[in-house]
Image 1 (cartoon, rainbow, N blue to C red):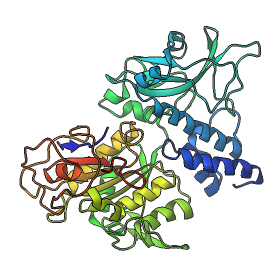
Image 2 (image 1 turned 45 degrees about the vertical axis):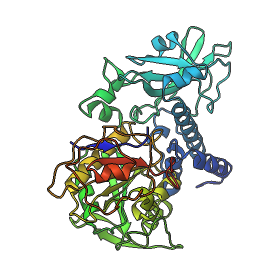
Image 3 (image 1 turned 90 degrees about the vertical axis):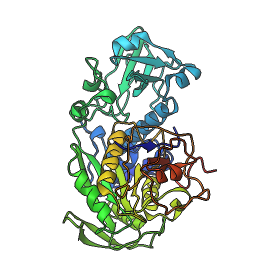
Image 4 (image 1 turned 180 degrees about the horizontal axis):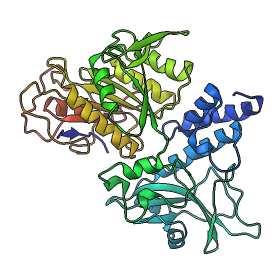
Length: 453
């Protein structure tokens, strides 16, 4: 087990006008959802549409796909404002017993905020919460008063299905991470929420994989270079995870300590491989350049970027110099959620097996919606290496400590050994936790930790 210290809770002319508006919208919402960003990348790369723009008998145009994607980003942002039902009720929402029967979420409850006679895709007014012992949003929707004109036109295409009950039309959208429904984003039921099942309490991935038929796409990058030991260990770990695919794009050479530096285009990139022979692309440049090559030049559309595993910790006031964090931030700035991963190893041999285990556990939490937004903008994971003395205990689900993010060194030796025999359980910050043998997670934010002292 690993103790975890968590210091805080246009291809075509017709698209151009929408593209300008949606670009600003996509950049604004990129930290809440990435539907629009991924749709835009797909369209620009090869004209394809992501899963949420497919299905039904009506084929969406590029403009309609971008528009729908932006609306889904709004829906995700809406839910993240009210992650706890008490926040929603404080805003005036009330329980809707009719919706719970008409569009049910088993072991959950539907809340509605206000009433309306017209459908506005940018203004959801319902959230469905599932009870996994701690209520959380699993779907967003709209309730529109019944009128003589019948159900609202709704979204582009013909997949959205309105349910009439109690004098209102209800529409549910399954766009919340963990409970997305790849086969039909407007499905009125969800296998992971039926028969008393709870995705967050499930001991298997079966229900998740049943409705996530499109593999989760991951961009793997680092700052130690494509032949670094940490990225090789991470890739070997990722190959054991079901329901994902990944691309390896990393600097050609060691680039530690280069932060978020980037090079002017064009970038030079060549085929490369990890130490175990997994094929990728080696970019002549900084870690952030590898991300730019992937997203800007190749127009890849990953769901997530994993930066690491770095050989050596990236904590406290040192993080701005970290190429690992710099690459993750560059990805985040371009609308792709990211995780920064580092393994203690400045004064000891890195325990990469422990680092891989913690990284994969964080990945699992992220895809189930238990990490990343709205909890943290950019989770920064640091795993100690015990060097044969003591052991790391706990798991990445463990939340211990107080609401502090990466701060100053506080007079602590940054390169000191990690004391895995320590019995300390109350920490000054993530560095303090790490040096006392705890895996630490802190939000390093888009430009700096949000709780920087």
